[in-house]
Length: 87
Image (cartoon, rainbow, N blue to C red):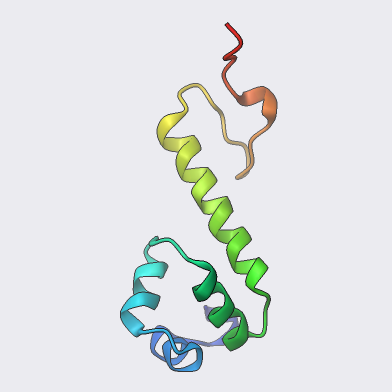
């Protein structure tokens, strides 16, 4: 939030989201479509931008926690990194 010099309290006021909800999202709570629309409006971005960030975060969490042997390179995975499940 630093590039726009916005703190959690200011963002809550501008977006209409409760400050506790903003703080929860900042520490990793999932973002929903309604949150994305409100953030997009408050920060002059698109809702899709926020939802893609959430999807990337979710994917990273799954790959790190439940896919043994999968290597994550620079935040992205390659299909060849997935375990072979054809057997």
